[in-house]
Image (cartoon, rainbow over all chains, first blue to last red; front, side, top):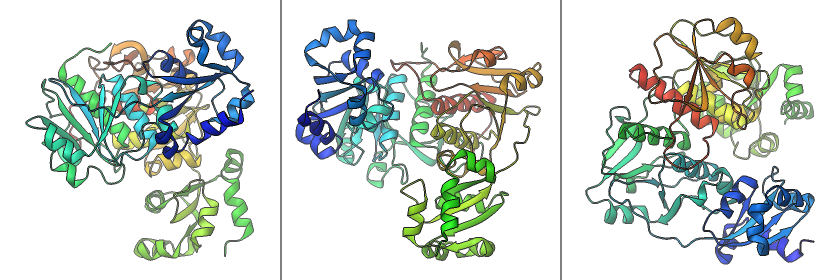
Length: 255
Length: 255
């Protein structure tokens, strides 16, 4: 039976302060936990139902010492999401390791993306389009928020995220490299050529777009052409459309 | 002061059964209500704070008879969303009017999209890309769900939605026209040519994709190329990427 201390500990990790204090976070649901078990994250423990253990016995048997069997009721009482009927893991957060765009690499830069669902979705999109690094402003929502982890659908295990002061970062890192930014009234995305040199692609806040402090480092303002009347696109949608045009423009073949 | 009957009525409209019974639905928040006032929907009444009325007095004065002033506390006690601090409208639903793709027109077809946030996002995307009609399976989530309306960010006032039995619809409407469908393992979206003849673009359910009954009418299976590892893209994201490639392919210029 799940101890009171463990329940208290898990619940504390729904709050950013306690995630930082304990350097741990929660991963919920079968898809995310299975991808987690296949990653290099350090897992503290995994709570699973007997049914889930049976279904994935070959994978879970490699992590035996970490596993505690719980009832469905215990599990559902814990999670942030109603749909979790299989498992929950508590995992160590990673160091905030410095990231930069290597030669020919495109790195995504997020300037104050505040909605956890949007950040998670953007991580999933980056993972689809083969973008492996995301650099975030310190004001961007916390990567380890359970809603971010859930929306990333396991892609948080493959995409690296680094939080930093963006104007300072770009002033030292951008150099002569391209810093493309999503703006209204910029150059049409369809005419814009993403070179083979790589660089940075900046997406702004849901309400306010890219801040003026970051805008100073943007070398190319690009805009998704509009054919109808809607005022704007969600930042996750805009990220997908821009990365899709980038890959298409590179003439690479996906799989 | 807001009457008990009105509170009860508004709360009942959060449930599909009562929306259908009363043929009414709720619109929340300033952006959505302002777009609503600019549309041809029939409004029953609008509840607004005094502050909001003052800010938009020129617009609201044209709808004087519909307006009831409420306090912030009354308003926040009513809505489905925490962020609503301005207004709420109760509006008559529209008839489920038949829609078809006219010559050179592309119509979006949704086969059992079940998440209200996804349907709302898709309506907003359609409105951005100038797609004016969406045909939905009867199992697709209810257009008038407050979460759909909220996620559409006012675009529900411009995009028409028609619910029908999709296999029956396509058997009579598709004829020799293109019915493109989003599938894994289809033709690359980047190689696919959207003609100038228009047709139908089918998006499937979040977990199961396009159903086999609808798949029979799909003339072209298309796939968004993948460059990384993520298993899939959210249906809203996929819709945006496909419509973006369609418009780009048409060689039209957005604004």
